[in-house]
Length: 388
Length: 200
Image (tube, rainbow over all chains, first blue to last red):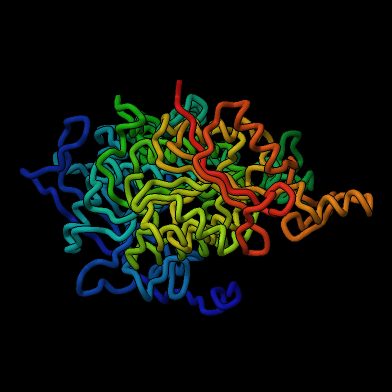
């Protein structure tokens, strides 16, 4: 059975990013902060075919550094999607059966409106004039895209880390528009530790002399600061065990004649990751998105028992054993809220040594369990029934 | 822990459960019993299980299941918030059976417990004549690999219920898929109890 699942998998061919623009003045998007933003463009990709009943649509939600290109080969640069192992014909999220949508978040820099976009009022990039955005704003923008695609109810919303927060936001803000939800490696709200890591990243960006209070477009970008922020991020995405296995204390062959050169492989890896990130990511987007992560609190003054009380969707919460950035106890809080609200939920803690990165890497286990869950949802298999 | 609940035990448990009731199965394995109870009694089912593979099979069966440890308690469930809590073949495997059962009795209006009777006649023979810890159909493990942490008899359990003020509403005893009525502590491999406890 395992073998079949793997061998029937194929990668989607070339895929193209599309763009949807809405909220043109004077009908701007009203943000949670009360500020108005418009027009708004979302970059998105779709895989598979929407059925006649429009009942097979799955929205995939990306994490901090992700983008709309979740699967297949990008037409423009031949890059594979960030969740290509999970999305495709015969895969965990089977594009032969489901219509899969993934969009770049509001505030991002991969085709959607963000601080690097041109402010129509000034004709120059927004920079630090871009309004503060929240996870709620990102999801609100997604509902406009879903409307545009003619879908009233999604079969599932799926995402890990920040994508998982967006899933939770869908569960709370648009409960009647989803049939099921899979929040992965995520939390109801950031802890001080999670906020602290993000703040160090932001400070690294802002300490870079090239940052210039966010007005660096057309000039040298704060590359060093953003690279350091990304290096810190990568440390928190791995685990002690996965780093020991991947690098050990191995040293690099090409040594520079400098006392503090990157001697160890782990150092070289972090440099490489940091430098690569700068090529594809905007420093201001990093500031805005990490702030949105820190401000996210799905409870928003509500009691745990009330947060999901309207929810009829079937929920499947997934965590990973070695994830110390979004530890399993945070996923268990989500589960607890589901139980208290009588939501039909399930919870699985997948064994992995990859740390937080597991949600991108443990695709074999995710394939099996997500495939089975989606199957039971699309068959309307409500075994166990709602509202225990 | 994967376990097979015999047909007759399934039927007995089902006969004690009202149609449409809410049921939590502690140590639900791959969810066979819950699936059976959904078919027979249209219950609203939830399961708790530690084993990851068993969780996968429950998800495939469309069940609501949580990968959790019963030994840490059922804190998020309110008092008497469920119609039935089942501890079938798990009771003897948890670290603190007294705590697990009291928690089950707190959150469930009724509790159904099933366990292998350690004083079944074959067990007694093996201990008495062979001088060995019994390995039988209902206790199929060698001492060095058994998941069973506690060994109790039907008589032990009756005494426990008396001591802890647990009311036995029903009981049934099974050997080789047959009901046993005479001297169950000697002739039954498996004991099943339907229990309740009023919250003082």
